[in-house]
Length: 182
Length: 182
DNA sequence: CGCACTCGGTTCAACCAACGAACCGAACCT
DNA sequence: AGGTTCGGTTCGTTGGTTGAACCGAGTGCG
Image (tube, rainbow over all chains, first blue to last red):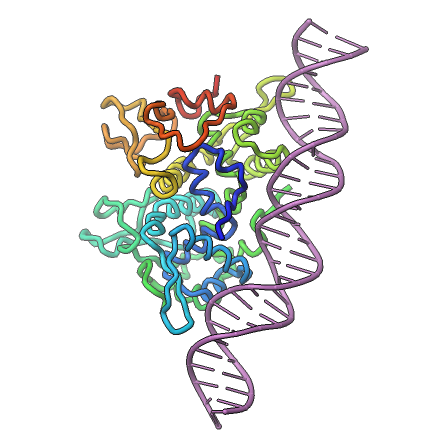
């Protein structure tokens, strides 16, 4: 069921960015992948966290599996889960970089609510810088060695109402990237 | 004329990525910005290079100006051009990172046709690595100090027909990023 | 077993965005 | 004045998004 999501004219664009956007450029797709990095794997959890119509989520997941970014695999009889492939994991720098831009320019001063810490850092670990570097050890950690958490409540300016689905609640506490949610 | 391009539900997403996608997530938007980094500034040039409907381009440019990513300014009586603001220039790492992913996973072996060289490099300059680093001097160069070019014809596998608009032709030769096209 | 419930979808109708062609007005050329 | 280019807007058609309803397999429970 291959489609070219961005229209037939895109294959005339002589550009790696256009190739990437044929897979990633549709609405919701990058948010689905962000959740996959956070450890969300099940259809229902994605739906609860994103408020995305079932049909759209179904379509996006099929496109991503088709493109080799996600793998669909059974975890119980009649139940499948979606996990990032190697190609998908390789998207982490792109997602992180885009999100940091959003932090700097689209949310209030102080940046967003979410922090990423280098949990496997030999130098003790610290919250990542804008470029994704760990300030303690100077390396660019892979997503598997990162831990994410919400800002503490007293750091929060309360400018935006918090969501209260199971995924949002789980992600308030420190959580290793890619580890399945409780 | 503010709109929330990705639907009212996005503002319930407690996430910097969602904030970024409200501005950048619509179809064509990232390709328009890519062209801006290449030095394309005029409505007609964007249209010729992208094959995008006039109405859509008009809408995207207005959204980007509205969001402070582009600035619209007159360059002749009755003629305006669109140039990247500081916020827009700050998008370069995100665009570059996404394009590199496209190179690695969505085009054939050998990567894409386009190369980026650190033209202002004190160590002589070389084509950037995957992470955007200059292998000669080890720094992460800003877009203004980069030069881009197409692969030489003998390196090209000919798998995709070349475009032949004025912008595509100009971008085959080495060209400083952000410098206006001839 | 029979029944209800959950999960992971598909189907359908209404709506809205994208497309492409036609039109438009200002500036410039001759 | 007449024609051309540029930078749009308008408009009818096409196609993607949305949300509600429906569906079928698997599980829990009396």
